[in-house]
Length: 134
Image (cartoon, rainbow, N blue to C red; front, side):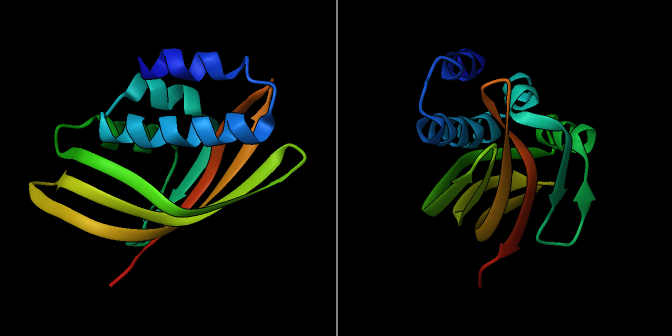
């Protein structure tokens, strides 16, 4: 379902609407542990910097999110600001994350900055940096 949504996005002519829909599909794919959808949303060279300071590449992110040790029941973003400049976009916002990580319950609020790039008419996540809010 999420993979289909991402495929349909290519048909949208408005880059900002396309980005908004792709970002929503990304949040949904994370909460559903849909590794196939995430594989289509993440750029091959994506870099994640977690709130704990861990730096991860695409392979590590997909392995973590596909692992039974990490299960998010919901990931929702708000306070989102997106700035598009040509084939690059910067997104900042707040994410509420609930679920389990390494057997421990997770209920946290994060600030994040995402960098998106437009390739062949599709937005791909190039980098993400998160920090925990108290």
